[in-house]
Image (cartoon, rainbow, N blue to C red):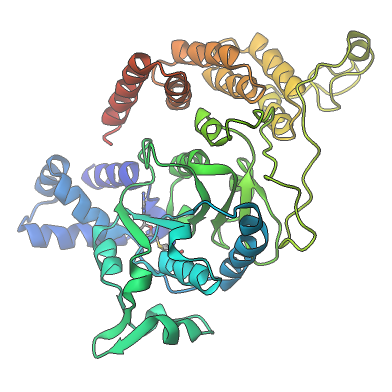
Length: 440
Ligand SMILES: C[S@@+](CC[C@H](N)C(=O)[O-])C[C@H]1O[C@@H](n2cnc3c(N)ncnc32)[C@H](O)[C@@H]1O
């Protein structure tokens, strides 16, 4: 059916869950585009649409929700201000704070970040703000920096007096603020999204997740995990906080602020962020650069450093590795197989890498062809600094599923970090073929 085909392709490209827009929104968007293209039959429009990247973009433009305003959910900006002043600056007398706003829509969010940082006394040469959105129209508006009343919905409008000039067409943002934001047109769901950029200390990822279908949500969180620095902070919208995010990130549990830290080193990219003179962290739980200060804005105390250390043999015999371990006593209930993997991930997050690896292996002894389990075991091995064994696990995953995205990406990053550019290039081509086959 033509309409299903359009919805499927749209959803595959932008991640949009058509249900979130209401039943008629896509029909209306397509009809509007048919009118612009002078096409009367929807099947003919589908043919045009499938062969034209411009028309695909045009339909995306019709279906995005660009709703945003300055200092939306102001508690997040206040939290960030205190983080910069009391956490980041004391540990970074030099250096640049890197921020990402994705999606940035018409620019209100990244410009709010810029104004907040300038107000906090950070000079423009101490921060970089990248701002990405899939909508070219929204980006063009953002670059203009001209805003109307509905962009100013927050209570406190002091910033408007400081940074805008009122004109007959609206409020014009000062060039000094405009210049601090780099707008980039992009799709967060592209697996090589912002590939090669240095990691970000702060990511604002607000009010997109709610519009995405489940697979796209997971993909988006994977990508953000790759882009966030080990000690970085991720902000999401108030409607988006919850279990899905907490699978990969740890909540900072601060009232009215939906801020998270990275749970684990999910891929090789985080390694690049570890300064060369520091030992590699042996865990997924990444410590802050220094102990948190007592006046820090609500950061929870950090857990003790996790370890890979295997218990001595006697201890292993007498005590199972963990109360959640697979080696249960005969009287305890048998864990459901998939839950073993969830437990393994959980233990890895807690830094109990040895126990996590054991659970994975137990699972794999019963499910030898589960590529995802090999990917997780590889991540645990890598977290423990065992790159070679990690590589073997990811290779097994690729052997089982030649186009396993996560396994290929891990291998690509590993090969690049090892300077094996030939192998890396082959892997990149394979990832690209995977994307092409998905119509990306
Ligand atoms: C509701 S706005 C959120 C803007 C801002 N973050 C905020 O919270 O106010 C959602 C934006 O997501 C953008 N968007 C939708 N799908 C996207 C994708 N796959 N990659 C990047 N941006 C996307 C839309 O163009 C739209 O501008």
